[in-house]
Image (cartoon, rainbow, N blue to C red):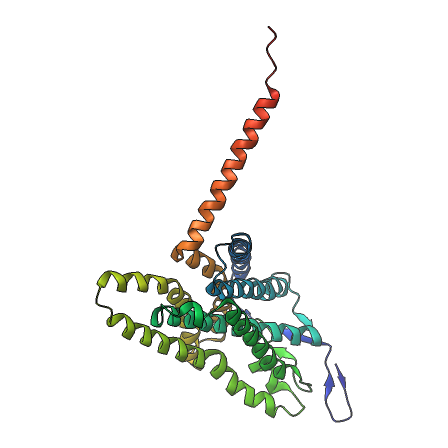
Length: 325
């Protein structure tokens, strides 16, 4: 790197030094590649179903579509680059590429959290106001909400990426982590310090508080329902979303609760798994817990099988020779 007039540097390369001293670590990256393939296939299937099946057009599926799209983008932003860095030992990463990596590394997990907030709002309105749900939560409203959350996430994370450096360019993590990078910056990093405190509040604590509060309201509403069968039926519509919330928030909370006591390599592995497992598990959970998606898959498979039978029948008819009298 080159030193400028004020001692700042125009950095051309950073060095990613995570996963040092872990035996047989290459098998871990092969495992990550397997997780990436499952994530892309699963979320791609969910996206295709929502696009193809006209019955999956409710406001809830706008948020589901956004979540599946976010999962694909998140997996694609993280896993191929991580595999390239560590499995093929390309640990040098350019300044612009590193800041781009940082941008996607925070924007997409933030949108995963916000998508869960949108889905929890949908469940809250559906159970609290079942008769007015279609008026309160329209498809247009959900599209506007998801668009606002995307714009908010992008704007929030863009504040992170305006840094200049004059100290070490070694980053002891598996990606360009803002928490480690802004300490190396030479320019005024006060906005980055502030955002490092604000960011967890906006993308972790406030969403979690909103989701927990919404389910407290849902529990109170269900408690007032006299018929037990109706309670169970309403609760089943929430199990998929609750599973997604647990998959996303619990590993992050465990990592941040342990804090500095955890070994750096263990922290890197835990955070990397936290980044890649939710995108892989989300489509599986939604297929298993959402009746509409299961029915959509059955309809498509049924149509595909019927088309094959009809194609084979047509082929048989064409190949049968006419009998001469």
